Length: 81
Image 1 (cartoon, rainbow, N blue to C red):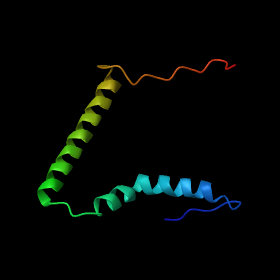
Image 2: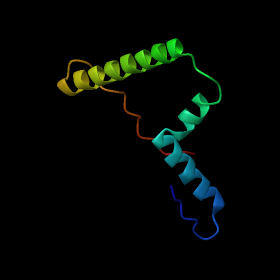
Image 3: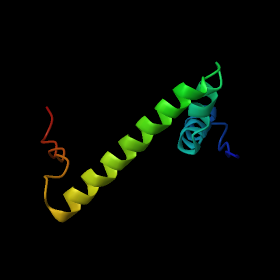
Image 4: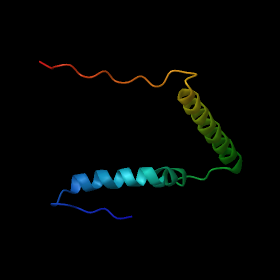
């Protein structure tokens, strides 16, 4: 993985790196490898993740088909004083 540092802006490069690591799932895997996970706990966790993904996919499909309302949109900000 590679991140370019422009104009010695380390803070921006770090933000980009963290976002890339999170998108790839590296941070989650590092956290999981800190301690041993029993095979039974791993099965339970993976099953829960699969259920979560299936529910999310079903919710998105229902929203596309118009069966349920979509997520609420943020109102346009009015003039601030």
